[in-house]
Length: 157
Image (cartoon, rainbow, N blue to C red; front, side):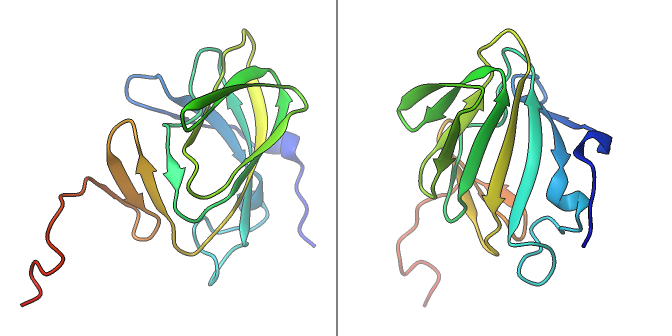
């Protein structure tokens, strides 16, 4: 059995170029030997992370997964969960899930840091869509792109 102490893990900060998206995370499953996006050949079939978001910041861009599930457990603070066209207030003790196909984003709307656990299954293949920017992404290879529509037969003959 491999064991770690979450309090001893360092916060890994991450932010967008203009700083509207900003968080720090403790990659708990990584500390226990997970290889991010390595399942099923390496790592675990899920990821567990403790995330901290400063007041007024978004935890991530608004996005939807094609196959990944995400479970959130709010440890402290208050925020807003953006789910498709809806917005839901969240607070300490709340738990909620985003299934594949549901666009989502978590925003700290409180005056203190928003702290939460996110548990995600780790499907070997996933595609992301970012409705606000029209961007798409693939888990493997980790690439982001915008699509251009073509005819079904384009390039086939």
